[in-house]
Amino acid sequence: MARVELDNLRKVYDNGHVAVEGASFEVGDGERVVLVGPSGCGKTTLLRMIAGLEAITSGTLRIGERVVNEVAPADRDIAMVFQGYALYPHMTVAGNLSFALRLRGMAGPRLQARVAEVARLLGLEEVLSRRPAQLSGGQRQRVALGRALVRDPQVFLLDEPLSNLDAGLRAQMRLEIARLHQRLGTTMVYVTHDQVEAMTLGQRIVVMSEGRVQQIDTPMVLYQRPANRFVATFLGSPAMNLLRARMLRADAGWGLALADGGQLPLPARTPVDPAWEGRELDWGVRPEHLLPAGAGGGDAFEAVVDVVEPVGSEIHVNLRLGEARLVARLPPGDPPLAGERLRLSLAPGALHAFDPDDGRALTPG
Image (cartoon, rainbow, N blue to C red; front, side):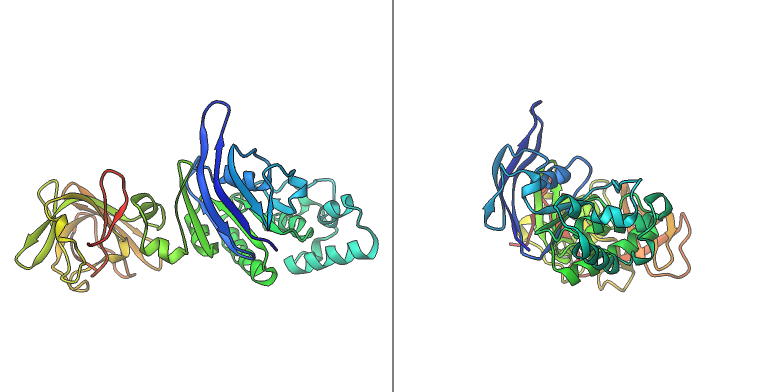
């Protein structure tokens, strides 16, 4: 295995478009890191730069102790799984798995043993004689993974490998990839636009937007302490609620004055900076931190139910608070009705403050 180190990587295309700007981070030896962000954010371009499929405009890329900026993809000792399965349709599963090894001159019992080992690891022993057209989507994806694993690379790169699968298979394959990594300890860089995949698969996550790295940390730190408004709203489903409001001091404590004149009382233990008083900021609260009145420990407020989305284990309630829109995640039970006035309160310590101009997270001074 090997670590991957990116030092101020930049990618500019001939038309002047900057796809990646100043990406710097390290993937530790045996670590599983996920690159996540919306379409066009530069995550796949960055992965292709690691693979050697995109030229690096500036910056330094190391795999292990070696600078690989000018090293050909075949000589970087990496393996890549693409969004499409890219299997050879005329070959059997065994043929697909062994193809790269045969190109390297491996043959005989050693080749058969390596293919059998990877097939056993991925549960493909029963389908080795089948061709890709005879396989399910999940089986094809496992063959694509196996074709990369069979080479025993230093670094394993995956570019949205589950996007062609249905929801059930995606969940199953996420689990299989995590188990596979635990067994092999392979250095892994995984690209996805799906924040659920990122949160469940990443030991650390690199969040990207418009070619720039926004924040790098563990899934729960990113969720609980986002560095800026983009990270806060990108991670989490339903997304974090955002309100533009001014903080005001009241007799019972602090509250938010909304643009349309409405007010939102804050729990007594909410950490605030007195310098925020009267200043217009963006305020964020997760849907699960909008609680039934009394449960949050703060004064209640009323919001009008707009649309109710029961999803089984919980209920997503879309609300109107004056001109503002909120989503609350409530426990299962009898759902409220559209048009009903719902009394809610904020969970203590649940409020996030963001600068309205640059979006950076603000902490109490």
